[in-house]
Length: 342
Image 1 (cartoon, one colour):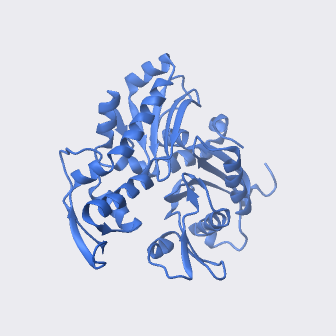
Image 2: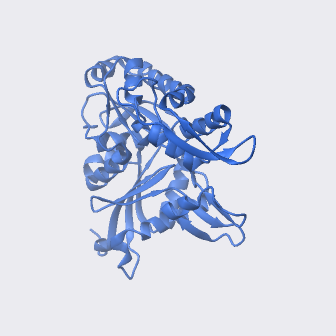
Image 3: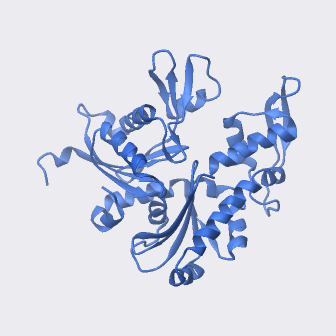
């Protein structure tokens, strides 16, 4: 133990394309959209998180909103660094301090990430006053967060559908045996809805509205036992240019997102095809686990279950499964040290 170890704080970060979550002292203390509002003229950061999200799609020429992460990795280094620093500052127990604490961080990253992209995450954390940085793969963190014992000699399959990527991995003995990472996830489903509204209803809607549609009436299948109510959607008429409203049904959204969902299904089948036979037997007995915001899409678990002919279980709080697992790994560093990359 060092002399100033009591000044070091432990935090776990789920740096997501859509949302960033931070755990400190076993509690989720930050849960905010991964978005930054910037002044075009001065280059100053005006807002981050929820405040920047309210500006998204409503800005004038002098302000632009940036999503610093694309497909699960850092696309805008300056904006992401500022976002991480400000989000860490907003942790309630750090606000009362005179001196910014040095930190030990565990950050989760997609399994298909390159060395350059890893370096970008590492550098951003260093600039945010991190003393030690550990990286953990998202599917591994999700499995730990769900409550799966990833260290035992047993195969477990996890599907983590985030905003930018879908991570599919077969885990055993604390490692990833086979994995498939595709850039088809929540953002692609949102774009499918924008395209559908434009083509079918001649209605131009923004990203925020399409996200709302996905949450309220989105579905992966055309037959639901407990269907959501139809939704009234407002936007701009592409023919007249006037604002107008249309009512949409969940079945049309299932058809709109069908091609993207088929790509997710194909990736799951590819990951299963790469799995060693002994682990396939384990997966047959234990089923498939799903986490991430995308797994909350109505009927998606049923659709994947039909395709694979295996039981599919969605995590209890899928949005926070990854950050929960990251927090558990941080708390039990000695136990999970083999899973972490320094």
